[in-house]
Image (cartoon, rainbow over all chains, first blue to last red; front, top):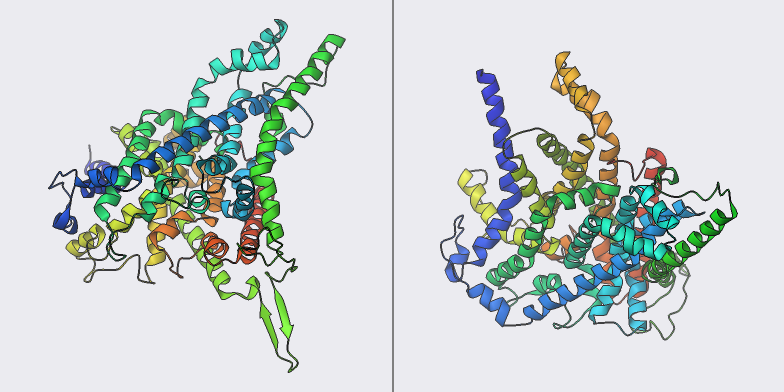
Amino acid sequence: MTAWALTKRSLFYLAVIAVVVISVFPFYYAIVTSFATGTDLFKVQYWPHSLTLVNYLNVLTTGSFPRNLLNSIIVAASVVLLALLLAVTASYALSRVRFRGRSLLLLTILAVSMFPQVAVLAGLFEVIRFFHLYNTLWALVFSYTIFTLPFTVWVLTTFMRDLPIEIEEAAIVDGAKPWTIITRVFMPLMWPALVTTGLLAFIAAWNEFLFALTFTSSNDTRTVTVAIALLSGATPHEIPWGPIMAASVIVTLPLVVLVLIFQRKIISGLTSGGVKG
Amino acid sequence: MTTEATGGAIPLSHSGTHRRSELQSSRLRSAFIFLIPMIVALLIVAGWPLARTIYYSLTDATLDNLYTGAKFIGFANYFAWVTLPSGRTFFSGILVDPAWWNAVYNTLRFGIASVVLETVFGMLIALMLNKEFVGRGIVRAAILVPWAIPTIVSAKMWGWMLNDQFGMVNDLLLHLGLIHDKIAWTVNPDTVMLSIIIVDVWKTTPFMTLLILAGLQMVPTDIYEAAKIDGVHPWKVFWRVTLPLVRPALMVAVIFRLLDAMRIFDLVYVLTPNTPTTQTMSVLAQQNLFAFNKFGYGSAESTLLFLIIAVMTILYIWLGKVNLSGGAK
């Protein structure tokens, strides 16, 4: 190997290491901080010096954080179920049946996913007040449909479109009705797509902030993102970094683990249809 | 996504026998029934609220008179003027509101800077991941971490790292000798926008990388082999072969990111609260709606943001002739 090739190779691996470190370091640093208390917090430490669980005990036993965690789980799980239920049947119609206005409908669905959330904020606020959902978790389940449904429909439509026509024809010849075709023929084939879209919808709902901030107003109905944003100390100038980092790690760790387990599925879900999750 | 692309669909047109057309009409009927719930859901959560936001933008509504009759005031929230008997004319409304134009400027500045940086870094990392090398799987897993972290959490994490007194970034830069005094990254007017851009680029470059990578993997490898045999310089290969071939995928990624950047709310709200230098259109509208009790005025700002994004989307699709589904395929 020539000297130049060696340099090139080292530079390449240097870049590789830089990418990995920059990607992972902030989360690593949050974990290190979450294990520090008192004066340790105010010394910059690149390696964990202390391993105290005080911050974790603090967020999990005082205040409403456990309740917020439960709220986020309830909201995200309900949103996923609702979006998948509505999307599976709709994408069957959109991908397997030809009808007039189908491309217009698909384009409209895509347009909805590009809506700035703030554009519907005022109108949604009115609708939520009208149904007496303000400051309830249902307000969030209801409003999150606006960003989970379009992309779920889009990805599932792309997926179902690529399933071979023969399977469906065989079912039709056997006299199966569309509902049976969906539940008995397509659903078993669609598990990978359902897992991917469900996971992406879950992450989107879990991370949402604007609606959660606007449509809930008490500690008991907030979700984790709002709770973390509003975590404050005894005085306005004293920011409780330790507990904030502990709460952040609790909220993020399950997501990171899920994403790493399902990375291939997530990557294919993100790139299929080119719609952001 | 175009109609032609629907490979698996059973066509309705060539229905030869009576049995066939009956089957088709029954399929059409059930398709219709299947679509109704989704359409109704989208109308309730998107169509109707949007219409109401636009309606409220033409009223003087506040949170207190939302149901007890907000007065219709035409376009006064957008633009209005009064001429006094003395002949002096006063203008009012969003179009002459410095706070609004400041927010427009901030949003554009943020959007352009972050999308350009994300595209460049995304392309570089995608090119890296498109090579075979030891540890590629680790890199691909690592870049998913920023993407998986909730925006609020990344805002807090970076807020802590960029803290002026105890932050790790200042500490590192001081030790490396790159700065002499600690910088108040998220407070100093010169660096607040930079902080927002840094965090956003860190968080969303992975998305860009994955979309570009999907495009790169569609490029047949024999093209590269041919170029290598012909001794074409890699730089030239990139500009002449790779870039034109991934352009559709790149364009889709850029438009999605740009539209997303135009509506940024959470990062700004949490990392630099109440800072005029970073206040974006979404933040300003949300504050007018719910914090300053100017529901009509805030609705008008939301409507303008919606129009800006709608025009951008239409222009982009029209000018770029982007196939919105096909880019990554």
